Length: 284
Image (tube, rainbow, N blue to C red):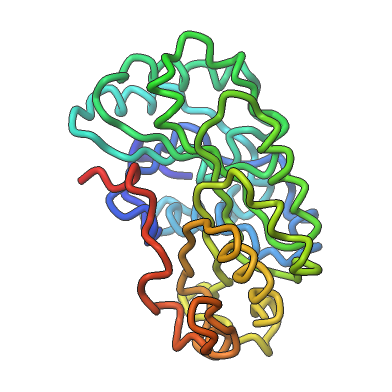
């Protein structure tokens, strides 16, 4: 996995953020991921790419196997050394709230966030298991810290919408966001969707790219189809929730999606203005 305590992200909506690598891995095995396609686990692929990039990946690297949760407490110290207001991304190299990480292992992170209170940092978290978010673990954090923490859930289709409702039930969380990236299947009836985004601050909509960063066309395996994206696009617009499209959506897909603001098709995922990234994330 990563040998760096902090590393810049390559995620467009988190430009300038630093990814904390203290928590890596997930307790979902590749066999389970294979139900949806192994390419869907971008966290595992990101760790494999990092392992190969630094030249320490042997012929039978363990990162090709089960993406076992691993906690590196010493890497949290790097956050304490950052004085300039910064966006920190936690758990993007796995899932901080998966069953493989215990409350005792998460406690050092909350302690570090408490220690850097007042520096203007923001903290972005993403999980597939929002039911494990327990604010009682975060006792000692001031309200200002909680207000600068963004808790998000990852969804890929209608089967995952329960995660949004589960996140909504977490008390004292003021900033909630959704990552619909990649869209791997439909989201069902669009008239049932708007209610899911009540109280959501920000939505990311994206498709899947291959190992070379190529946008996968909608007619290829694992390509995101426009009929999957249109309902969530409409629902987000109706709920007046800020959203961005990511480059994993091919131009062929975007040109078959109607921009609900104009009634005309999008040109590409680079059509600007689909709203701004939350200002709290723009600290530079």
